[in-house]
Length: 341
Image (cartoon, rainbow, N blue to C red; front, side, top):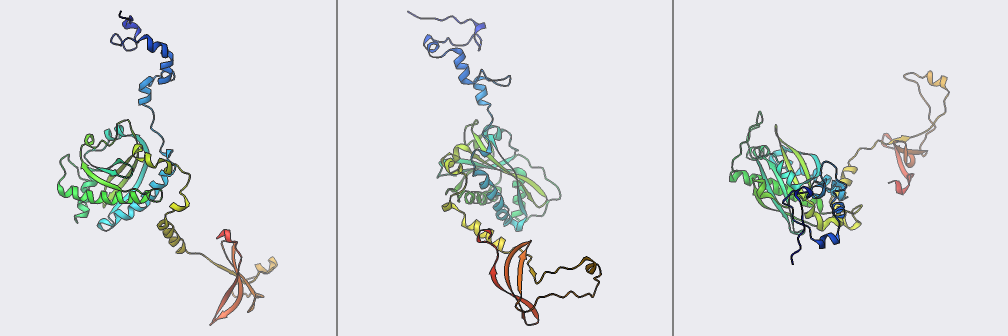
């Protein structure tokens, strides 16, 4: 005996073509409960049910706490790396870093563009580097010793030549090397270039609904400006999510090269040191009477204590002396505490 359920076209949300709902399904969940699970009861006029799930906002870029420091480190090293090409003519500047759905990102790419698909074997995932046509042409001119362009040239959509591909591959390899180095204090990973594409449909590295962290650079080559973008799908970053979600990099994962570079820069900073030989209490009428040529007698003499300070912070105490024809101070005691170093 066949069990049939009538379903008039006017009662079905999808019209007369909707499939009948079995009694077993009705026994499990009511229509209201199904809509509540799918978000239909909370959906506004913009989207309901499955559409609300598909149109949900991408996860915030701050989802992985240490991803932002990785991007900052990458943005600091990339100008030096690309600056080594063509005598410093290539100057990248970080514009933004945000999360976006991969399908929307590929649909809104500025074409023509050269799309480099890279692979992270340690994570078993892929990513994308996009070089727009203007930047690709400017890189070719700069690395081949061409003259500066007086104005921006129109880039036509055409197949890239082997020379253009070789030049862009060389630059992208340097970019991926810097990106690998930026992740190294957190986890060891190498990004390897797999192939170059010019059609976004052939550069799909994840489903269109997948969310990716996109890092955007504005790159100036002489007088021409282009764009360099890097897409990191969160699915690719998933194997390192636990490490990237920490509050800070552990003691064993410190970047020694970064610390050495920072210490070197700090050591080269200039510091103004003040030597206080004596302190006097003088009446205001006497100070008002001072003029060019007036002499102020100090109680300092050889062996008197002298304070060395900087910016109002007492650093050292020593004794006044003389070396050749100049006054000198022999440091004898440190005045700042060790934790203030």
